Image (cartoon, rainbow over all chains, first blue to last red; front, top):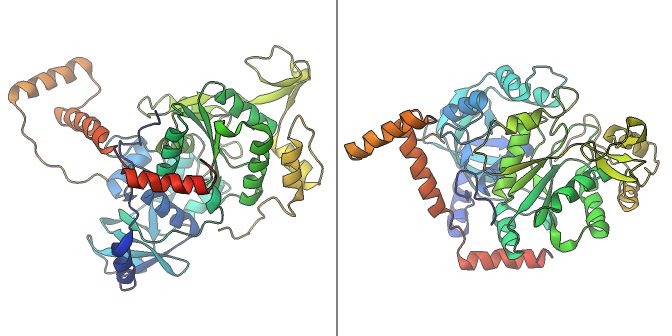
Length: 388
Length: 69
């Protein structure tokens, strides 16, 4: 049986039919806030239940509860504050109970009932969520550039933000029906922001050995320069699944959600989100959602132990490497051989090889995957590049 | 969302039992918290029912059209 949604009920705040038409007209008369791509995807994720039980952007009580206690004020685990930031001028004259129109790309996206406008300390946010105020941390840099006030309140989605990967994008209510239709009772979710190498494949298949189905759910949306482009990740996974996975054991779909690089806290967030998609298990590898050396390689595992009421089972999988003596991918728990036999699958090394146009060896990356990546003129996001 | 709180009346007997339960087991800070947790558990199970048959069929249609089913 698929997981119960976080908080017990899958949120649905998508407005349909004639009410939608009426509200779209009303939106044009309301005070408006233009959203960036990240916030637009947050709105869609709230409305489609990806962030259940959130019905909107956090009010102050929940914001502080999440920041300091990693729980909503209702005591439900929640580790990343989902907030809408505005300039004071954008909400001048707006009172509690008023409606705001949320626009994206100059068009109405959603309505928001304002419950509260409040100030926030961005440095404190960084300190708590990222465990650092270091401006070199990509998440910190992004938060410090956000606007002065936060607005909390429920949102109602009137229009879907554009999705170039619509054919491989499923919402929680769809994956839940899909998993049930396939007869899966146990589902392991895999979060990623990378093209797959053999280490990823090993981890996924190790999990799949013990569950009914594997849910591969890469993030698309804003990422830091140097990360793989969304289309490269999607095409690389399609190639891997086509050639190396039993079709009926895997569901691949993308999730438009920003990477925050918040390490352990974000690992919990990733698990909660996949629980809402119906996953019963969540794979947590080495340095999940980490960046640089801000977090310990297995720090996320410790944080999971603080949430016995999470409602999704973490699968802690150690880093995989190729052992020349074993002649296959293994991990330190199952391989007795010394370091000189072990070949680490380093993401950094792979990136360097790809940048030089070199095909990585097969024990590091499947040839069909390498072909997809190398055929792209520029597989990596560049510094200063605008991302949708 | 936090939302407002309202008062609910329960029998004194039940209240005393709940208080004793909290003292013995720990975990909850007050009877309010225990009652809220229990109601949430019961009601969330009810709310989960979710899609109508028609909605489910629409979802399946989309899944078929995308090649997932």
